[in-house]
Length: 282
Image (cartoon, rainbow, N blue to C red):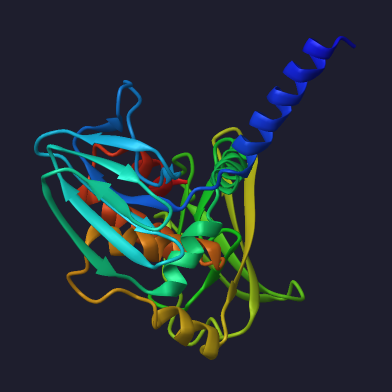
């Protein structure tokens, strides 16, 4: 290999290694209006990761909340303003801004919530639903529950005979069975016990006599785990950003059912936000 070729290869490897070492230091936890990477047309979305030296342009009337992982600090900006992400803070030009401290637990959880995890969860949800055409279980599916106001829901074809729902314990023993014409069921108080594993199944007979079946599992957390989760719950009137962080915290701890209810609440407030909508329906 020629010296010039060796030098070029070495420089390329060095630059690639440097790029690989760059890690995000913050996450977008609230956004409304136009926000883009300065000098480009690339728009920034909710849950986007931000790396040091990124410069963002916030348009007039737009607002942005950015949460730093290590320092547990959230910055809020209202445009027009240009900001630059630094290792542990944000530099900005003239414009409206404020800062607040957030719980370290939720900031640390947000850092774990990588793009690869988001994509794999979304793909798994898609594959699960695609595998059961005509009958789909919505909630709870492969989730831990805190036990707060649980309701089971599913989607299926119209049928004059309705749906048969069966609840099983961890040994596949039938605990409860009922028939319903609707597609929502709320278990009686005390039926689901803390610290236990369960499965539930929906069966529906369609017009040609074919029987459709869908089954999923879930667990109810023990009282100590549920208490720890509830301790992170935002207060009434919490900001959009605080509730986004709580939803991420729930997801990362396996409480996907409770997280989806938060995303659904956020989606009602921001019906045009594609990221929030996607997380509320999967």
